[in-house]
Image 1 (cartoon, helix red, strand yellow):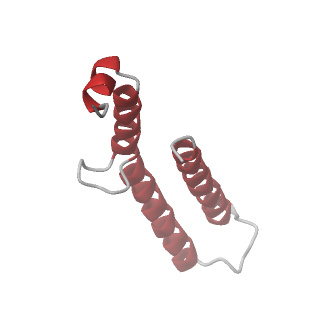
Image 2 (image 1 turned 60 degrees about the horizontal axis):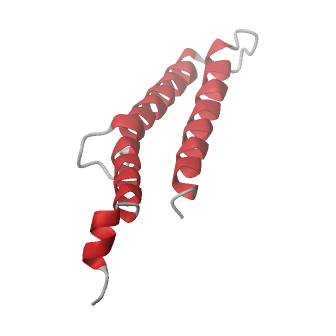
Length: 94
């Protein structure tokens, strides 16, 4: 499970990057006369929401459930605890 979490964060970020790339393609498509200024403005708004969600996920506040840094620290701390011989000896049943 622990190995899957960093991979899931990477998939999440990659997905956001792909969405943002596609949104920018819509905004920059000057050849398509069907895309109005209102449409482009809406797409830019969606882009901004994607950027905000991505940032929240990566470095959201300490209480954010989407905070990747918090999750990674927690995993590393747990791994260190599991590999700590002193803690291991304290937790052994008598």
